[in-house]
Length: 82
Image (cartoon, rainbow, N blue to C red; front, side):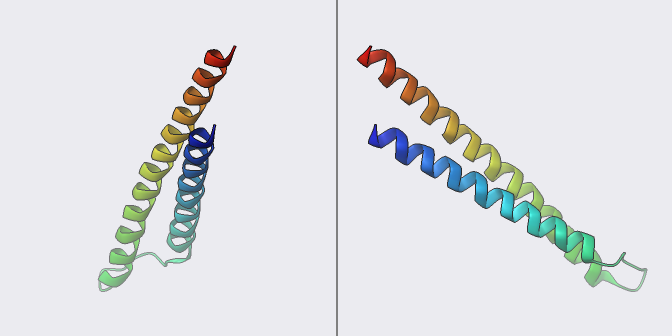
């Protein structure tokens, strides 16, 4: 059971971290003014935040896979005990 709990905890932690990353990137994008022809800094900021959004998406998928694995391990342990 300890293995399942640590796996579940890691999955939840990864998913929550990803959610925070996505929230922060989306907030920054929303606060950034639209780039003008002369301003490449705003375009760079938006590009960096879009990358952060994609990283958050991948981290959330990883967390979901960890949670799914913990669920499968727990199910196997329960089936073995029954």
